[in-house]
Image (cartoon, rainbow, N blue to C red; front, side, top):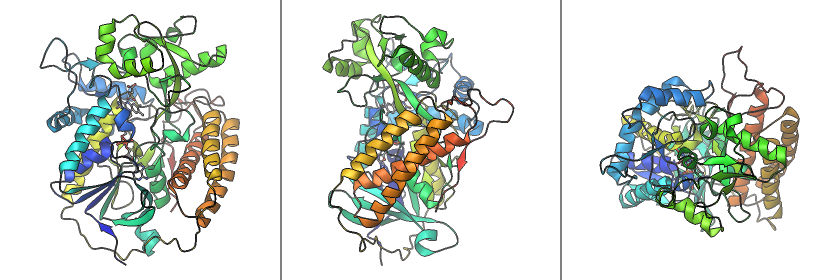
Length: 533
Ligand code: FAD
Ligand code: SIN
């Protein structure tokens, strides 16, 4: 049977990573970009702080490398770090060429304003006030919409990859495309391409409290893993120290750039506390700040701590943090005069599908870029603003690698279409929504900022019951977006729990009461989970 949609390159995800790659390839190949929601929706749209890049004369590439490696707690791949840092300037220049407008330094129309964030020993974060992601994402999306060679498919959720081993019983495993559900028409489509790229972002939604948008359900990591890709370091989930604490403020981040501009973390009575945890105080790496807040909240039985930037003038706050200022005002908080209530929340997935420096996974024809990938840049803890940089740098290196393979063979394999003949329509959705809630709650309670073997084993037990139910449901009923995402979240939970149980030490973002110290005897090792085709 012929596939319904055939392209040279199929990209799942229209965030910074997916759109950058599409734009880099569009003059050379026919590209399809699938996105499971609105095209602009994704973590990229909400990025606040900015993108790290060495532009200041007092700064150096070596310093950016050293800071990244230091934050990564022994697990960064130095070759990857050097490559990324070296590519940063040309990447930013490319963004400016596309029309991205970064905030200028007030004293010069030539120079860009650079802010500072945790772990960075210099000011090196280029930004568009406090909505850098929106500026980048909307600029790239406008460009992609205008290009004839890019076909955009919003509301199309990738279900599973099509691989030669699974679908054609070949010995060699090659990716041939993916099955996708058109959410608006509720039909299943087959997309084929000699090259498929997973750019589906991270998996913050596996936790009850997260800074991530609803689309961040780890789909690409789960799909890649099910197809046979190796996955690394999933225990390293980054909790951002400061998300707005308000019953109605779903997932709103208070940028680390506030701390870069002098904001202090304080308790309810106004006492600052970060200095007792780290010499860099508020600008210590994120794992340390998030754990310190967690500790203070548990010690005092408080629901939140506070972030106070009221020492800065109203004008400064309105100029540098207009989005955060407005959002806080909507909740009755005037940050120019009072401290903002904040709590940590799941923010970034450091682990992912293992790729090389060109974004290639270990399955032929399959690439992974952006938050879905594990390139070795972040090690055990990502440094602030290195993520958008990674999206951009690796989208460009993947594009170079794909361009070298042009013209791509367009032979269409005889791929079976999606078979729904043996399933029926589910009568109710309650078990899906119940399982979503249960999964995210036990992940928060048992696999969160502070872990223990007992908690992890308890989570694993709960998960295995859920997985059985999901499997039964999947084999009996028609797929829906909620069911697909739940299945992916359960796979992500399995990867995180398994990886966390394998690591018999505390390192970077993984902290366990059973092994509170970092192993200084054995050389640091990635946790690698083999794919399960
Ligand atoms: P995303 O931007 O998340 O895009 C994922 C895309 O994949 C979406 O289009 C989605 O619809 C699509 N998708 C997902 N699943 C499927 C599927 N099954 N089928 C089809 N499509 C699918 N990093 C920084 O460096 N600097 C910052 O200042 C910064 N601030 C942040 C603030 C917030 C609130 C958050 C949440 C993150 C922030 N980060 C920041 C991290 C950074 O934004 C993300 O890591 C980065 O944007 C990820 O980009 P991406 O292209 O990999 O994925
Ligand atoms: C922030 O602005 O605090 C987020 C930056 C990041 O996640 O890199």
